[in-house]
Length: 537
Image (cartoon, rainbow, N blue to C red; front, side, top):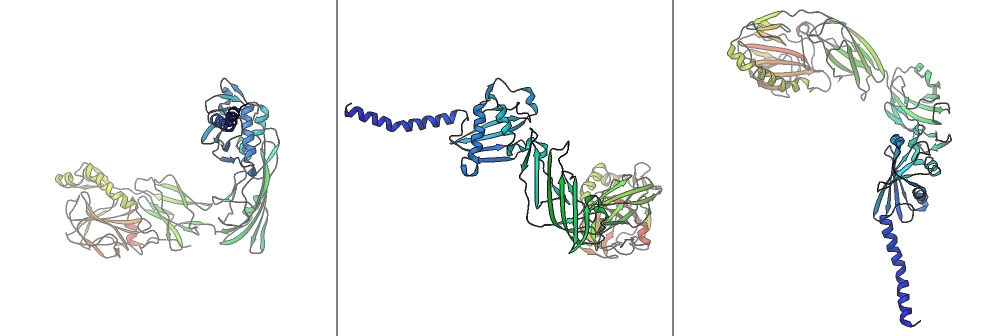
């Protein structure tokens, strides 16, 4: 062999590894993933959205998982289509990353290893052999295939309590049990509990033993069923030790045991008080809540329904809400069900009937056309509804004692609260305040202490001032000729806030003064003679 031929052969031998590498790269970019060589990482997404990432690093076991799943692909047999029986199968999506290419495969599994398939990126269907499917169904990432893989979770006041230890196993398709990794903690956290010491498990244990300590004193040691016998009447800081077990019994697919150690800040039980037992239609009552935790809501329901959702406001050492019974509500017995922090109580209120008579009202048609039309009524509602719904005083009421009846002694009451006003013998509506006939320019006084939340004018009301007195109670002053206050001003009972006039829908100089609990108009008459009774238990 001459030297030139030897040189050519030598050069060709040098390029063979390069050609092989190029050929392998091209094959990796276009071929099916049926071998682990060249795969840099593999990400599995289970049907519940949980992801498992494996890399080719042998140190963390990722290479073995990649080798396993690519061998599943290699051993599978191509099919013509996917069986209809797999409509309810759980789908695992696996992304193989090779060089700069990502290939997505879909694997269809049921608890039956004889019914397992996958779809490659080209849409081809392959049947996975039973042995490979059985091995897949025993992997950590297949846990979602089994109901028993849902491990116990203890919650207190909606917050999950991590156990100090949790040994949990779930049953596989073949009847064997597989241990499951779960999150635990070495820390002893503090949780808020209600006075009934309520706690809940997503999986009810077969046995719960509880020990409760007040400081170093053991005050309870028994099962959970008897925990309600431990009466907590004041705020305490307690220590809990709980041992829970879930047995292997028919119908259950998981078993295990857990230990929980935690502290609990236990609140005194909330209690509820109604300030009166009977009111008339159009009046309001007060519910007082004692020992309400700051972060606990008060839930309210009425039977029959009163079409009102109360707002409980912090008021000194208590929380209170005003409950109006609108004029259109029927008389009868009402049951209020109030709940807070696991405590529920029923309060009974009797509502007596009140007859609202008609009151004729004569007014020039030109005033009606200018001030009381569908458009002016709608405009008033749009502007004043947010005012009525607002709560400028987020804590503590300002009203005290009785409320002022109206303007100067020379005034004359012309239309009372709730009367059915008949306009010129035609249109009727229910009057929402008290109207007084006064001289124009008469002083209009604040009926009680409060904060001015609105000063303005509408076609219907004329010049108007609204004062909030606390707990959602508001006073409304309409038809004014002049206002003397600004939004945000603090006023006291008897302060002059405006002068009377004949602006808006009125036949002559008129002072309209009304009260409402948020959006519901309420009768002021009883408040002229007696202060609002507030329970301070």
